[in-house]
Amino acid sequence: MSPDNGDQSDEREPLLSVQSPADVLAGHPTTAYFWGHVAASGAVSDGSLEVVTSDERSAETLSAIAGGDVARETTSREYAHDTSITRTAEEYTLTLDGDRGSEEGLFGRSTTAGLPVDGRGNYRFGAFSSHDRELLRGLLEGCGTVCFKSSQGTVGISFVHDDRDLLETVRDLLGDCPVDPPLGDLSETSSGGYWFGVDDDAAPELGRWLYDDCEETGLYAPSRRRKLERSLEQAEGLE
Figure 1 (tube, helix red, strand yellow):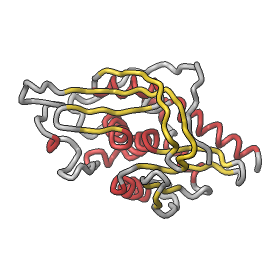
Figure 2 (tube, one colour; figure 1 turned 120 degrees about the vertical axis):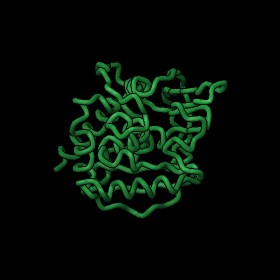
Figure 3 (cartoon, helix red, strand yellow; figure 1 turned 45 degrees about the vertical axis):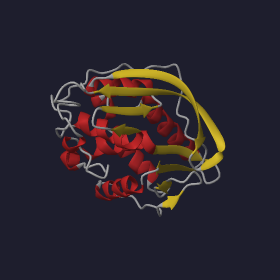
């Protein structure tokens, strides 16, 4: 499996108008997608929130949902599965700062206790249980990889993160979704994190389900969807 650098095509899909509830913690497709991204590639503290994505359109969507400012930078990082490989890519960081001089703080909460994060830093997704597709799509785009495995002629989907508990949660969410794909064991990466893969035979069905309604809502990263579609086409071309 090669590093998932995404599609850096100049083609831009239009940003749809995002309708979000006034409370970013309320159960809603937009908030499920937002918190999936935050959990997968972000960090929450009492006074601020930061989330990183490799897709500019997705970063703009997250900003439309929760507010905040988006900054762009070029970064070089070791690939989680193989630290001998370095990937260079454009990254977009959304930052939201609470008013430290106000008792309300971030999203009207003065501490993380009011956010979907428990005292140990683990995410609570119960409020978004009716929107598992959007939640899992955000998690995939934040800490997942999609690729075409040329040696097997199959599509690969895996999830990588430093937080083992988060990946256990992702596994539970996948087990509860309509596709219920077989999953590989949770293993350590060479960089000290953890990862698991979706069974190759189930990856196409899962990928199609995750992005089935995305154009209607605008809650997706265009580069990630193009990567998935291209991988599916390559696999189907070898059948």
